[in-house]
Length: 450
Image 1 (cartoon, rainbow, N blue to C red):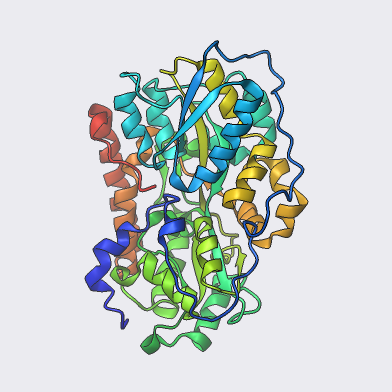
Image 2: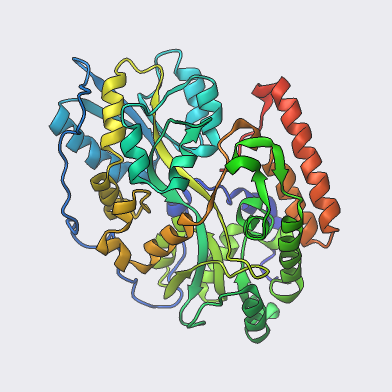
């Protein structure tokens, strides 16, 4: 590729973090000269009939309760709005401190016992097992039944640890296939169709590619494992003793993965970088781009006439992605646990999630919110929700921390032509070794990449 990608690979690969901070850091110029498409965040608010009132519970805030909430910078418009509503109804003062979701648990471990941590934090399931097993957070007990009834099973699974619900789900994070409608009117339904289209579109000398995805990163390459019968851990991600990353289904899917290097994306793993891929799609040099929902506004601002479709079927099987769900969690160190539980519930209701969508574009986890006519009419958001509904939740147990590094390495090796079975077998052995080591020294467990 002409962009001297290899020299910048190290810095670029770091940008594949799944933090929502990517939404605002990706700055793509409007190369096409198109007017930016209308987004759900344009124009005045008020497209929903939102109702905020006291919750149906006997739980009441403690006298003199004050709450501190941790959330990312990108979520501030929503958090400020929902804090105001909560204070008006319950008389509890709430303040927000900006802190990325990836950073919260590490800070919480130190600040919680010292009484300096937030009462309500936001994080994803990759940190849940660690937080729950250490007793850092309280179960979602008061609102367990209503929470389970309102959300998709995959959302509840991500907010639970050892069959106990801890979180209050608030937004979906998964990936799907963006496609440029000016380049391809009907998105391919299968990888075989992608291969055929690439024969007519690819122009490697001019950095034009039919289909791009973050092949070196297991999180994004998971469809080539999970769609054909592979899995991370058994029993819906809860049994670390059952690893399905090198079974027959995983090998079958990875054969399709390896074939794309030659027939669709003839570049080295080191030359696949998230920001370059984003820029090429924004410029019209990539027809299909597999990436996350957090890039919706980036492509809108770039003026791309895009749609979102499921990732094409792999080896005859419907594609399955890994999903991440951000949830509120209540601190076990809070001086005001009643008020904190009320806020977490209040800020994750149907009305709250519609407000979050309206102010930040967040994809709801709430079934009725996702079924709202406004969201259903938004083909982009509804497409991501549909992809999420059939996804596999990334495991929440602490042992998952040993998966990412070996599997990232395996993706790179297979992309570069190494034997699939031998590579997956070696990765699984490394995962087992890491789990055994971390069981003895849990403080040395590496963090998940998202």
